[in-house]
Length: 438
Image (cartoon, rainbow, N blue to C red; front, side):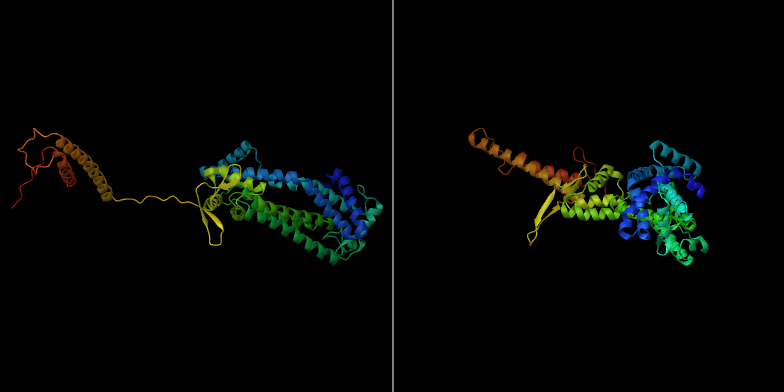
């Protein structure tokens, strides 16, 4: 471990300088030789480093989202080469290369912290070895050796012997108990952070190598911290425990406000967003508009949670726009309750009742008969008017009860139609009836 830490000796001077600056501030409050002054200096160093790593964390989030957009393509590759694992891995790597994504992007914050971690280890190891390092002179070295956190010196380790611990002014029992508790908390926080990512913020519908990697890290990292933690000084344990707590809180914020599509966290987020939008009738924050804009742009590729969200807006009389805003729908029925509260509900389109075949045929016959009778009545009125204007040249031998041909047309037409409906021919010679057998 000393050989690895010495490789990062170039950064020990900046790290020791930052610790000394924070110590000068906290020393005026708690005292320069107290564990609070040196311990809070290490915690402040962690916070400063993590703030500087926020752009890298944002890049990690974007890379993770890019990996998630490739999941449909990954699923197709898995189905196509499900019997050939080697070809499946080759196609996956080819897809990563073409899209410019990296499945190891989740490890970027840890890799970026490694130089600071080993530099801090090198500084604390120098304090335990009674050696000045960086900007820490002899007076600061003596002050750091007197600092204890819950009875354990900053430079003490779990594996140190009683003689070395006694030289630092502490008991072996205190050192073992404090370091053991901190190692357990460090491993538990790491496991919870990774488990939270796997159970709430991962689309479980697609099995990808990225998911297998995250699942493996969920168990590997806590074991690594537990194994190597017994060789870490108390100050390094404080550093790494603070880092894990920061990562856990940062990830909880991201999962709650920017969840992965298709995950349980997205279902919970869209449920909260539905209540908020339907209550206020609009979106208020830019992050909400960004989420809605992405959902609208997907179209038919939406998952079940996103479709439920769009349907809930429709039932409430709201429509999601392409720019991420929400407006009231056009087809709405406005009703007013007894309390005077006006509510809107989307008007439903009423479908016409379906008619049977007999009803459709009877309706067609009725319409034909009405049109024919109307034309016949108009024709008879014209004929009677013409007969009244002329007084001679009428056929006297025509029977009076004989009806005009125009008035007999509906009867013949209706008889012909009824005969046609009964299975006989409309016009022309009729088929002779077969003689009945007696």
